Image 1 (cartoon, rainbow, N blue to C red):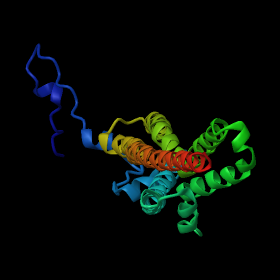
Image 2: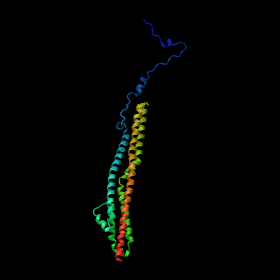
Image 3: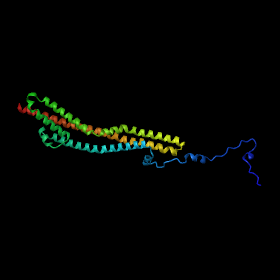
Length: 265
């Protein structure tokens, strides 16, 4: 028979502590990560597909808000450009006309606010014609000024339609994205506790998906704020030009009344 193999205790010198048994660290760590879904597609679309449904809903909402922002931009650019061109044509007609009656005849068929100002002022002049000799012109001028102010306010409000959405998106978008981030990180930590591992390859994708919601919130909000401020300035400039056209019509009405008084005297 063969002699038995010497043991570790027999080979160790007297008085020495026995060496600890060797463990295979790879073998012990492998079961902890075994079977865990580790996504490798970290593209925006891949992170969207792997995100929680609440985070997906937030991302879809922010993408829709961004689409609304750019749609409003295109429509309002065209609308403001058309309004500016029409106002410039009407203002040129008012400046090159001699009387309010001539202005109304030359602006026949136009539907811009400045043309409506001229027609409304002329109609008020015709309604008040019978009482001008006795009541004077002060009341007519006040009524015409009231008409011009209301037309200017209504036209400006009509041109502002739609940009309120930009203000809402610009102010609410970051908070909606932050909600998606908080929800996604919460789910990431829940996944960490369930998998009982802090391996970065497992944790990082969930956090990246959550942060993507914040990024989309900023992508939706920042252009909305910039575009909103641009339109506010553009509409304010257009209203100033409309007010100038109204003032020109008011001066022309006053001039016609003076010629009328001078002709009857």
